[in-house]
Image (cartoon, rainbow, N blue to C red; front, side):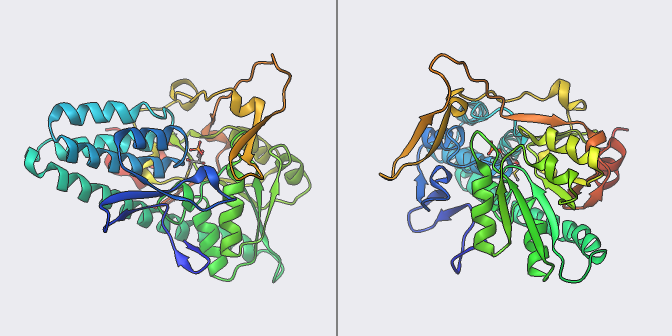
Length: 365
Ligand code: MRU
């Protein structure tokens, strides 16, 4: 997407220096810093420390990590070591394992001498495919927003609510949940987006930064405000992203998504999830029982982090000294609370039958 007239992806290959470059998202929205990712340790740190974040972007980054591993040592043993090293950086977003599995399966039959080039070409493909998937999700979501707009008096905005950052920063481009928003805005449909702050990492600030750069009207709200807004008829539709969706359509996403889905259900507000197919875990059925939930450092909760006046990232403690913090980073919204899944192949029910209708190649026999 464009920032002040220049088109950016969230990661790109620097052909002059032969290196991957990323936007270090820890500094946003205050500072736009681009950094190279040059070693396997850099790749693991970038994912674990959330310099890159968002399920699809984590997957694309891991594919470039595999390309680096193959350039350093293209043996089977190193391929397996790189898979394990990168896979353990973040446990919930399935795109990480999806990308690593895809790389390993494609590279295994390739002669060792050709693996470095093949791995880099595959990483580029995975990045490009992500852009196209998200563009299509945008088109499919646009149709839903159009339907809502058609029922409103001319000029009245469609009021959307989103949680976390499922924007272009969380993917390679377009975003998942934001892609329908960008498409609708570009089509001239008036919008207003309620953006949940998304404690503890405040990914809502990233969403606000993105929407602001694209000229989409929005308001940054506390995580607890959504239910109140829905009760008062101020939300027409919720759209979130997902880190892993099961074959029966249970949606794992950033902590707090479940509460938004409950509030939407109670108030008759449609709750949609933008779902790229690499985020479907076909091996898992019951999301609450089966998806591992990342537990992050308690300091993210006991302290509020931001960029200080001096220009450094800093944190201020908001709890008593000895109070322990708990920090589950994701939760699961059962499929019964999800109105529909917006995929690159169309919109379907959040159910095994719904997903199988769009992805018959994965249907159970
Ligand atoms: O912890 P994060 O910032 O990686 O979590 C991101 C989310 O939960 C997003 O909503 C999800 O990855 C979908 S991104 C298109």
